[in-house]
Length: 120
Image (cartoon, one colour):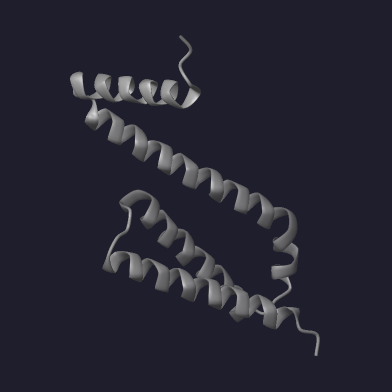
């Protein structure tokens, strides 16, 4: 008798869940999940840094000091905001605050970047 792939996958997930419950590994599993979330955040930050290093640094370096502070401040606050979301998880009022702060950061950074790209 051949088991369909979906059913086989569900049986594997059920077996893993039974092992976690029987061996009381919920704490270890939640710790591993937190570490994976943190690693994912760090990988994204590394990719963004590499992109900035290759393309953005030279262009942003010729801007006026105030525009550089606004742009880098918005990016830094966005990194802190996303880090808070990755570590703590957001829901309810915290989710609203997360999206408002993220929107404000993106708005400030994009507006500053677009003002510096105008040649008139």
